[in-house]
Image (tube, rainbow, N blue to C red):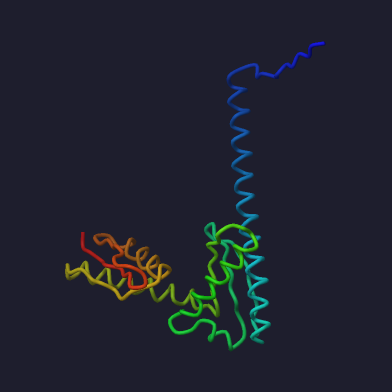
Length: 188
C-alpha cells in the first residue's frame, strides 16, 4: 500500500511571500518574547540572590526589577546601610554586580549582563560623568589639546564616550589595559 503525501502549495507567489513573511514575523516575535522571558528570569534570580544577601547582612532595602535596553536592571533602594554596599567610588557595587551575575548564570546557564544599582549611586554617577564628558569635550574643542581622563570602569567610560559623541568636533577613544583603561578626547 502506498501513501501519497500532498503538500499544500500557495496558489500564487504573493501568497508564498505572505506566508514566509508571517513565518519570519512569528519567529522574530518568538525571539523577542524568549529574550524578554530570559531577562525577567535573570531579574528574578538576581532579586532572590540579593534578597538573601540583604537578609544575611540584616540590611533593609526594596528590590526593584526592570528590563532596559535589552538588559535586566536590578535596583536596591531604602535602608541607610546600603551605602556600605556601594563602597568607595562604587568598588563594592561593582563586585556585588559580578557576584550577582555569577549567581544568575548558575541558575539560568547563560552569562548575564544585568546592571545593579544600589541607593541610586549609578544614576547619580551617570549624571556626573555625562557632565564631565561634556565639559571635557568643550574644553578640547576650545583649546585644541587632547585630554586624558583618569582610569575608569567600563560603565564609566561608556557614559563618557556617549557624552563626548554628542559634541560636534571632538571624538574619544579608550586606551590602556584594565584596570587602568582611560578615555582620551581629541579634536577632529
